[in-house]
Image 1: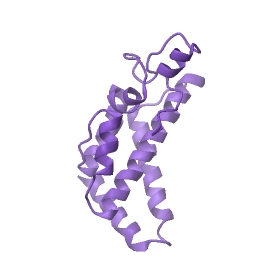
Image 2: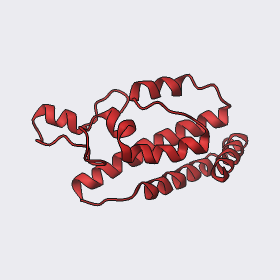
Image 3: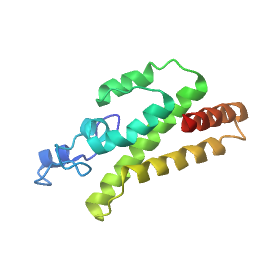
Image 4: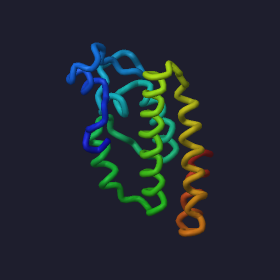
Length: 148
């Protein structure tokens, strides 16, 4: 994703593989990496839930988001949680896009948020043995964020 080599519809259109480059999540704009993950209204709905939980205000372009993540100066637990949330959200949005493309299966933004939440909880639990303090700090942060 970071190198912009994923086959988003703008790239497939450029290669002549498809004739419609519309975003599969919102159907209103051409699908590019930046649009798919940050400019798309559907994707933004998913992101907003986690931005509010983690009190992180994200810009809406890929490049600006990458810069914000690299320059984030919060605690280790919060930074790890933020990166984990970012990775899980990117993954879940890509899977949703592909399900819509290949299987015509559509899920709500709320359903995707639930999947992301489960993924993050599982990951936190999986590091408990190797990094108990980090795991505990992340879990406290995540649960307090869910209560806000």
